[in-house]
Image 1 (cartoon, rainbow, N blue to C red):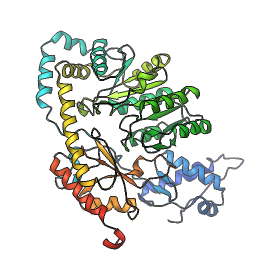
Image 2: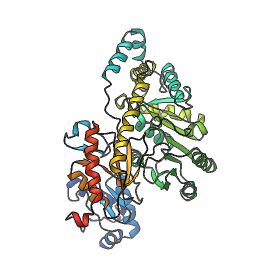
Image 3: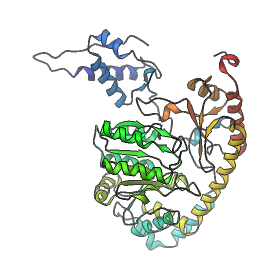
Image 4: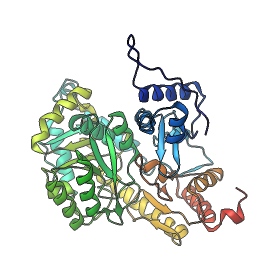
Length: 466
């Protein structure tokens, strides 16, 4: 922690200065940009900086909040405020960055499956119909071609999802769907509830949209109804974002009764529920999707990234009827439309049965990977299911979270700290997420699991001179 050299300018009769909190935030940004404050650096406490600058603690609190909104710093409960990394988000996956010797358990991607043959055939099938190809190359309604929506919706219906092709909109993947929802249905300064550990991509979008996020407590099934009700009373939120099936990062899946209890609270407080169902097609059996239980209370997000191919970048949204036009306008403003060529390619893969075959291959592969997890980490505090791409590992008391992540990385195993999934101001649990689907081979995964098992058995105070 360093004494920060910040000069403040007061307003005069001839000159109206920027608010003090903004001057402090601007100074922090300048010092980060110049390298004076490096990534990971701890800022002074609110009281210490207030005393140094001779301003109120409230002014510093507001300045730090503004710096956090700009994604310059991050507040960690019980630890302080730290300078963020300023490079690309660490949750973004980069295949080219994978080192052959490393076991990358960092990113929740589908297992490596050969898709070249089916894609080649699908593109050849499309090329046999030049009239349809020419039609796809024109501008269309933002919602997407009706024939394509019908194919995708019917396929989803065979998986137990009550998706109406007249109400669904195509998107460029699930991340784009979440961005559309925030921009269409939230305003700057609104509050959105999230699970106490949640998808970091949504936290990033919320910061970008200048939307406040507040955590709701979880148990082994997901969101705790009493915690949701308390958050509704305290924060008057606009909506709640959650992943009811194979929650990221904990793998929790809500029972149908829990889903009904959560929806009852949402109706009571007129709270929209955003159901991120990106993992929803992975379990071979699961409770009814929340959109099935109350389509006028639920905004449903889904996509084909996890169950077919991430590179297609094809997702979808279904919203309550009264929000349909606002979503259509937002999608038009974002990108005019989603490429009909991509939606047509997805329809070919569905029509020829390739989508079902890939999903079955994924089920088989992940089941084998989860067996390896049970074999090597079954004696530790893991939360997982046979259908999940990831595992949630709570660390033994003798391991500090940051030390364990560093020790694993030093031995060539990349894992993600709970810190990444924790909303600003939330309490960071002593846990890590292991994306077991990411290694290209089962042998590489097993290599990483063996390393982690050995680390977990050792007390770093006795075995490692930290």
